[in-house]
Amino acid sequence: MTTTIAVSGKGGSGKTTIASMIVRTLLERSDSGPILCIDADPNACLGLALGVPPGATVAEIREQARAKTPQAGGMDRVHMVEYGFQQAITEAGRFDLVTMGRPEGPSCYCAVNNLLRRILDELSSKYRFVVIDNEAGMEHLSRRTTNHVDLLCIVSEPTSVGALTARRIYELAKKLPIVVKEIGVLWNKMDGECLPTEELSVLARVPEDALVLEASRRGADVFALTDQSPAFQTVRAMVGRLVAMPQMKQIPKHESQQVLEDR
Image 1 (tube, rainbow, N blue to C red):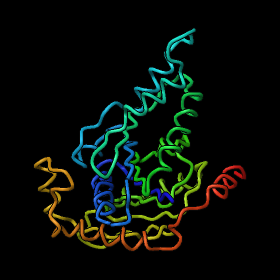
Image 2 (cartoon, rainbow, N blue to C red):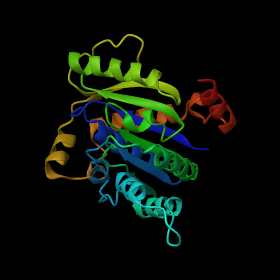
Image 3 (cartoon, one colour):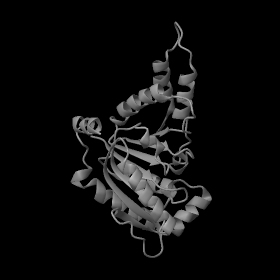
């Protein structure tokens, strides 16, 4: 049973920091098993936040496969993508990291994207948890390189622009051609009241944290952050509460596929 948590938010909201805190919290659980971390933000900072250097990107694999001319003998495109994808997995103890890289250009990548989707689906099914760090536009999810998300966590600063961005991401998520079971906003860097986001439920209110700021200034990863960090304590409590919820259990695969077919 795989639980997929996707994190989104505009640049500067602390999205990647929150995603890395979620990963650290899941690693503390005795039932977490292996975790797959997917960096789907073109800025590719999740690896740095987790203390591991990113390897080759999926975008590079896609470019190489698309540029390959079919020919007799040698490695065909399918095997090239499969082999390249395995090389792109960075192993780091109890979690693995896949970095998606830059989005594609104007040329058609449909066939390669379909192949990557199949490989990523097969890979994800081997993990207890999958954590995806998305960009605000959620390009990775909109191209259906995964088929379902159990929780979409929208990270927002408590500003009018942050609230507007959160609502826009929420509206976009409702139009995605995938199953998204739960959606909520996480107010980050709180030093007062959060702004209303109408239909969006609030997952957590993470306080402004000098320990997180200092760790960021030093270039330290999330595992160097002390347990006394108020921000980390809040994220830890949120993850524990959400993972225990019955609705966070995975939709059986046949039901998920039926929903996709009905859309």
